Length: 440
Image 1 (cartoon, rainbow, N blue to C red):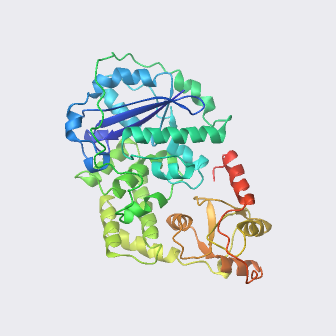
Image 2: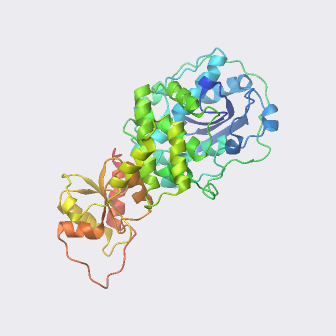
Image 3: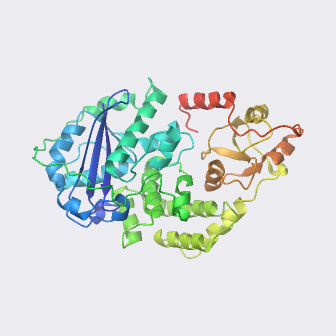
């Protein structure tokens, strides 16, 4: 039914002659169960690029088969199945380039396949773009991050979770025939030996990734998603990863331009994406009301890589300082149907506040997304995940006490304890929201 693919590459864009250095395919049945898996290193006939990230050793790559050696077997694995990947556009871009080198066009159009990153925006409310964040939100294990097989296994787990969440009305069900009935070209089978890593090398692990985190490493999962996700998210996901790993090729801006060209992002759209990316990063950097010299240096480095004009960092920081001011009771002005997120340990159970919001025509929401209008926090200076994401989106934050004053509710009993976990009502509501596959 499904073929879940992941690649490790020597860089960001085939336009700069970057190549696939490792590929994995996990075969999954219609119920989301893993049927088989296959993985091999590939000799890219060039330098391996960011070895400190993907962990592939030169000695291993030299003894690996070339793409033309494995292409026939890869076609056998993919044909008749629905192609799936996390950031499918990125992996497709490299597969297209590798097949073009063979003189055999890759037969699937860009819209033929499932992207677990794109699907997460509707099926994992509030999740970020990264595989790590999506796996965390879906409770899917992720180990050995930045190896093709580990990432393909995790992506297969995400796909299985999506199948469970939407069964039996899968959002992609109507497209399956057009995805699976494609006529694949004949690529001769060539004898080759699978080549695996001699060890895991320096590739990052999900558990130890944050041990020495700088600004980008700490904030990448809280960067906001955009409205035009089919266009922008594939690019921004790669940008997130490249910046958080503190790696781009020698000509950093040229690498990003080549990536944008490969993804067919217009220049004016690219500039706007870069500007909003820096603005969101500045808001997140100021989440604790303090900007260290390292954070400031990171912001200037990112602005330089993104080809933003002089003064962009100062403007982003000024706008971030203005947006960081918590709302006062007098400033509360929400339209009926506005989404509100509650976060932090409060003196009353959260269902109480959900009911109060409903009485005023507002809707409580379990996660911070771009459509949320207000976050009500027990502590407006909170560094919780919800508060960070709210700052990334530029969503106003109000203290629960100011929210209480604005609505005119009495203070709770002085002996009341704090309630942080969701009650049954909120859990049931969140479950119903997922089952309806809301686009919030």
